[in-house]
Length: 505
Ligand SMILES: Cc1cc2nc3c(=O)[nH]c(=O)nc-3n(C[C@H](O)[C@H](O)[C@H](O)COP(=O)(O)OP(=O)(O)OC[C@H]3O[C@@H](n4cnc5c(N)ncnc54)[C@H](O)[C@@H]3O)c2cc1C
Image (cartoon, rainbow, N blue to C red; front, side, top):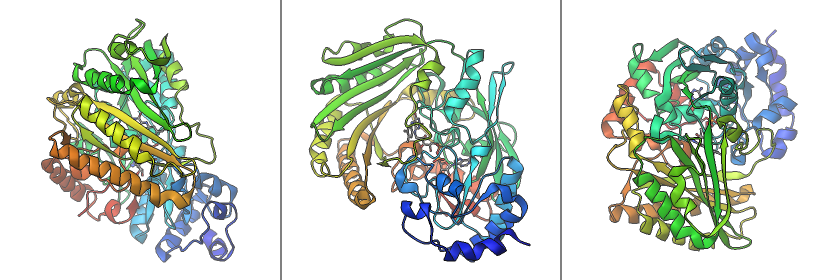
């Protein structure tokens, strides 16, 4: 007897328990999804989670942005690539909508969650195999970066992955991957030498420099238009020791802090691996801004030389340098801990600007003024982030014979200026996201008029209304669509899949 012939009517009639507390609504599962869940249940009953179960409820909220707590018709947790292929064949045959979750960090509803469709959670594909002879590591898409760093640490090896170590390997590698040593080794996607992929009809292929080379290129920056990646083979580097710097400043240091940031990216030549998380946090209760830089450099000298411009700023609250190992540094950079059950609503969004300190200080001042409009929102935590895009990062992909989909110019450094805004209540979602969007777009329009902006967006830091793929060079967009037409001729990932960013028809 079919598993779901018993369970299905119960799904539709019994009121939801815990999941309903998260999102007070009922499931409206389509015939297609019902059929697909039933087929999955027949062949893999132990891997299918149904509503009204504790495991289902736990998985629904296992995402970083609370807005993404959508209720799927069923959840499938494969443990092998063959099981992923079976699922894709079933979705394709039934025209059933589905979403895919790696580490669950992309912060918008539907990025790694789905209402009424099937959610595929990849956490069971969590193998890691280190090849010290070839300096490579094979990584399943269910891993977070901390697990990869932990597997490499005993060998003195390091992979060029996420700075905050709880983010997923899958999403960050496929979207691009801003890392500590971007300036020297490029984006994470530039360090992937092979992908195992399940295509929309369930076919399994390997994409590398020689085999399916167009797909190999296309996967570098444009997730979820081609297939589900079930294995990444990633380059590793001998980086046993590093020096970290943590510098937290008084508000009065903001102009000098922004200037130090622009000087860092302008002076970058990629010779010494170094990078940073660079934020200004605003506390709406005290009305104070706190600039902070968390840097890491491939050196055993302290203080790390690349951050000298920050070290020279006098208005400091905390300044700590530490010669350490990459794994020790990462262990302290898990944000938030993966087992935190309920998270804040979070919205990202950004634009690209040339490193102009005067203009960025004006933007910061405008942001402080604009916060007045949302300061009363419960749980409001606004953050202004400066992500560096040095020339040398683009040089890596220009010289490695592969390239990537971004099409970045290696003559001009940029900064992705980003808003990360957190708040507590769902009823404020629209108010806060509209506020963020209107600020980002009005400032970007001014930056364009000043000749300081360019359109390129990064998927990892994009807002739900932004589509990075449509900001790539036109010839890259055409090449991506051509590749998509070849590898997903039935448009499974365009029509049926939620999440990522889509190329469109
Ligand atoms: C706190 C925080 C810190 C961050 N720090 C960094 C950083 O240091 N550097 C950086 O570059 N980015 C950073 N990001 C952004 C991050 O790269 C993205 O959120 C990325 O999506 C995380 O990957 P994930 O697997 O956790 O996400 P998910 O949300 O699970 O996946 C992202 C997208 O990829 C798709 N996907 C997942 N797995 C697969 C697969 N196997 N095959 C095909 N598609 C798949 C999903 O469907 C989804 O649409 C950060 C984000 C947060 C919230």
